[in-house]
Image (spheres, one colour):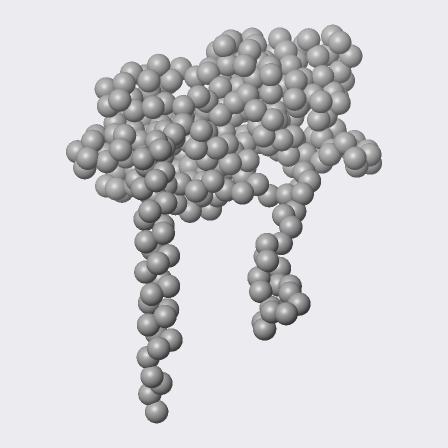
Length: 313
């Protein structure tokens, strides 16, 4: 908002300022209505220190993006027993919402693509009538996150505009993921987006399929790559860390770090949740507008009453 003086007016009045335009303008954040279902971030791992740090930071990003969101982490069963009330399974969270008479939560799986735990997750959600969203990828924001992790490892330029040389920069990338051949095929779409950013060939491979990563590295070498590198399309909890270490050791290729709690992953979780929220009916919109109008009227009455109160001497 900008303040401008209008001729003839006793005081300046506030008039709407022009909105910033262009690709760098931050989009307006949609408002989350009161009573919206909670977000359950489904983690394909049991609760533990390795997964906890990543998911807690991701939820922090989600909450900072949308302050009205009610979000919790749901783990798979099978981990060590814990008395921490924050470390609950997906089933426990859905049951608690049902017992409390709350709207059925929206379940967002914390995976970038197809994964073995999704069948179990869908079956569990069906018992409670919960919605399970699509996976987080393929998506351009995941390609951005992989690019940043490669640049942090010295395996890629930070962006194509910076044309300085990096002696260790990869001239071919194997995008590694978990979830079998189906996951590798889906990762190939993100790989195309990554190749456009890096201007080097990118092929996808599955860490949990024997020989998949080694075969992808051989393919790159046969087509002219002399310095192939591995780039995990892995957030973290969905993959055994030993798979990543073994792939790098067996191929002799340097590897970037997993995506972890990179900010765009949190943004993808938030946008995926928002897209799954039910569309409000006309009656609900009218009721929300009436509540907002009543609140504004009450605030105006209180301010008016306060202005009329005599000052105490």
